[in-house]
Length: 402
Ligand code: FAD
Ligand code: NAD
Image (cartoon, rainbow, N blue to C red; front, side, top):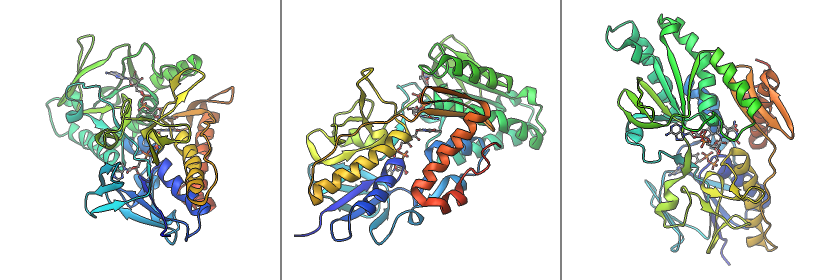
């Protein structure tokens, strides 16, 4: 009998960990495993806000895929997935034709959720990939560099609007709070001329998060020069500014949308039933009605039965799902029963910039440098899981208190 082919789409948190687990779970003669990813590197999506602000170089955030996987066991294909054909068991690639699979793992991450707000797709940046954050960093630097070379719209050049104060928005403005003084010094821009405005539609920043930690975050960020407009939605975005629900018009040369995510559009395009682009998966993480397709990470939706609401899409859940999927693929191929996925929430920690963070781990609240050190431990743990101690030494955040 010929070996089955497993195709994994995406080498983010979910996809790369599925590949790593499969190379441990399966032997060479049990399956062909193919990993497809747009780039020849894995990147930690969770660090992208730092690259966007320019507080961390993007090369620190990306890792060549062939440094992580065992290429004797996993065949890596660098290409962009264009279409998933669920009934024909085929994936169409942009450049390298098509791939046929027996089992498919979809880990293609997310797209920005723009809620149909006019102009956002055209005029706002997104914190999405190495390419997108490199562009944000360079755009902001360019705007600062123009400041002393023009007499027109100077204030607009150094105004940055961040739309959405969820975790991504808050982490990004935290990095900007560190970066702006450096940029001001480099480009001779008076600090008081620079505005960073974080606009949030909900009545509070970080809606749903612990109130005391939210207050700490706002106090800390405001003290470091971040302005918040809370309870006001962005209604429209145009080239050079945003219109708000309260009628205000903010002229800003840089607009970054951090207003939420939805599952990768390829899932909807394939005709699967979705909620905000995410597939409500079975307990064993398979696609309903397709027992040869697994969906993980930001593409998957799982209900937290305690509160009857979906778990938020995070790296933490994507990584845990990868372990279950690898075990279940082994069961399908080598025999055995499939296991159900159970999420173990290990806590949430959000950085607010250098040496500052907030978080909840177990039932303990963390603030300031303790939380910031914990965040680095979490980041380093991921590097350890994908590449052991050498990867931690190469890419890790080793100084926990700086
Ligand atoms: P991703 O990690 O996004 O990976 C998707 C992969 O698919 C990428 O490699 C991408 O290049 C590839 N891909 C996409 N489309 C195609 C295509 N058409 N063809 C080929 N390849 C493709 N979560 C936490 O738990 N903790 C945090 O601290 C945290 N911080 C965050 C900070 C930021 C700034 C952001 C934006 C998110 C953060 N998250 C955090 C959320 C977390 O990053 C995501 O939930 C997680 O990355 C989802 O993993 P994934 O494997 O589904 O997708
Ligand atoms: P999110 O959905 O968590 O937050 C988006 C925010 O934008 C919300 O507060 C929402 O009210 C606001 N918003 C929506 N429409 C708006 C409008 N028109 N005008 C102004 N504000 C508007 O999205 P995110 O922050 O990108 O996070 C995505 C996922 O990644 C989440 O699951 C999050 O938990 C996870 N994440 C985790 C961390 C961490 O653990 N440190 C960091 C970043 C992201």
